[in-house]
Image (cartoon, rainbow, N blue to C red):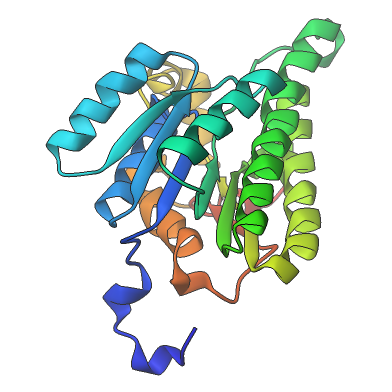
Length: 263
């Protein structure tokens, strides 16, 4: 990359000509991530388990002038990941950007957590991210293509909360995986960073945060409010674009100051 002083600020975040893969993209934060990358000029591949939902999303994105393609992918199933990545490479091309967003959670006390509960969360949040990242990085390396991998973690990978032992563990491990990948993949021109959101307002958590426990949690956030999905757009674009060309192995926290609040 040339000296940044000769590059217009808008051009730093331009993703025109790039191919971006977003997992867990058919709803929630992943849907927003896909939209933002498409609006920045990327061709977006949205991946998830409910293909009909993904196809409807693609129609919406195409109506907005975004080039998009939906693929079926269950990140917990190695065969599904392999088939999806083959389809992507053949029909669209090798991705320049991967947003490892697929994830699940479960609120349950440690003493009540079953073997199945634990395994399911680890296999999606950690093993699934590893599967997709490794396959994507291999394609980038074989094509001689530089790239950016963004692992969507959580502030619960940095600090813990009660009744989320498997989720917190999976996200903490994902942060360490991010650093390990960054160290090894830098030689191939592949950057790996993590986005660690705090509590973000979504339709799924609206009822909880309207209750007493939810309101008490919000009071622990220095900004005294939940984040909005759009407030992750700038950090995402930073990590996806040339604006972060000298960043790898970083964890970008977006949480209203929640993770630095006093104990």
